[in-house]
Image (cartoon, rainbow, N blue to C red):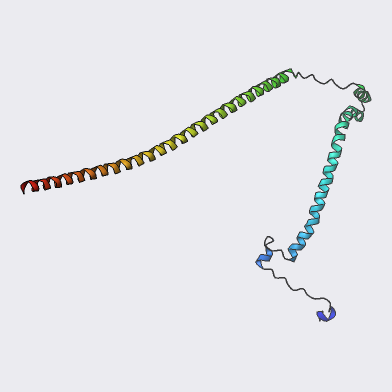
Length: 195
C-alpha cells in the first residue's frame, strides 16, 4: 500500500562496497569522490584567505614601522597628559649612539691582508704542485724508457743466447765429426799398415 500512495518514491538499493573500495588510497567509490570534491573548494578558499592576509600584513608592516614612533609620542594623550604628549612631539629624536667602527674596520683590513697572503700562499702551493707534477711526469717517462730499453736488452740477450747455443751445438757436432773421422782415418791407416 505504501507503494500505491507514493509510486514515485523508490527505495535506494544498499550500496555494497568491496574492501578495496573502502580504502581511499586504492580506489575511490562515488561517496569518497564526493567528499574529496567537497573539500577541494575549502582548501582553495583557505589558501586564498591566507594569501590575502599575507598581502595585508606585507602592506601594513612598513606603515606600522613609520607610525609606531609617532604613536608612542602621542599615547600620553589617552591618559590625559597633554603637556607630556606635546613635549614628546616637539622634542627632537634622541641622538643615535655613536658606534666606534674602527676596531671592526681594522679587523676587516687585517682579514683582507691575511686573505691576500693566503691567496699568495695558495698560488705558491699551486706552482709547487705543478712543478712536482711535471717532475713526476719526467720520472714516469724515464721509467717507461728504461723499462722499454730493458725489454729490448732482454730480447737481444735471448737472441744472443739462442745463437750461442746454436754455435755450441754446431761446435760439438763438428768436434764429434772430427773425432769420428780421425778414428776412421787411424783405423784405415792401421789396416793398411798391417795388411
